[in-house]
Length: 217
Length: 215
Image (tube, rainbow over all chains, first blue to last red; front, top):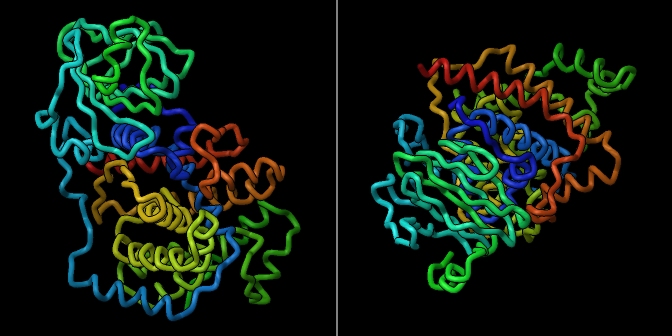
């Protein structure tokens, strides 16, 4: 847990706390925070800002009728046991939020090859941003690409290096428009990453650019 | 009925705003809709404990009467119609009851925790999206947080609220815009001058203790 060296930015944490991020980004952030107490603490401090906003709202009219309706909701709920997922936790290689989107562990991912030995699986999220898993065999490079928007990459398994640094399990890399990079998986095991993008990736080579619409990258 | 946080609050008030009349106001028992000092006179953490441990509907009603109208206003400012805001408030407050055992006062004030519940409800209903949430930390009854940690965190949160009020108008408006959902994520700048460092360290300590207790 303490091995994580690359964390979420304050901007992203605040946007996640405010609840304004596209679902794909929220998924990546929730997955990282599940592995990183440092960012969990940072997020919860942003939530405190939201709490201050709530406390400071000028009270709207809310009748006692509404309180009665809520108590009725609670009474109807008493039949069902309280929500409690605390004891279901097992030390999964895949944190709970990501498991929910995969529908299980890494063995349940339906990989599709996208060339060069690299495979991907797009996860279902609302339009506007895309979440995908990438599997990069050890020693293999992901084609050189730039970004029109923001791309976040979170390492789930293995490690990769690019022009900037080394990224291992739990590490996050945030790339923007000016950021061209070529991630290369370290020799050995496959590197599996979760990525979130809010615009299609832009590959610099001609062939990948033509293939782009078909591959859904 | 409701315990007042006397010692803590008064010391705190003096530290924060020397000479400010918060104590007088409390002594007069004046009820204001919008209190100047953010940590209100009621010990909401104690109220939450009564909800959690005693399933106390009277405590819940007090919480609802204070925070329900704020939550509704918060949701309306975030773009909900009055009807939707009211429905969301009821759902969110029912969730507060159901999840009371997950509230950790060494990591969040009651207002903070309520904010997260209202925010998630807003995303579900207004944006019709799933909200991926971090994995819950396992949290057994044996890990009742240390009272000192609770008090420190609650005081620190009150100080943050004060600091937000003292920010220049323009900065405060930006933070409000971010939290009421008026800014897209790319428009949010975290360079707001918010003093989040101390709160973050305290939460971090609480998390470390939790992890330690789990082993």
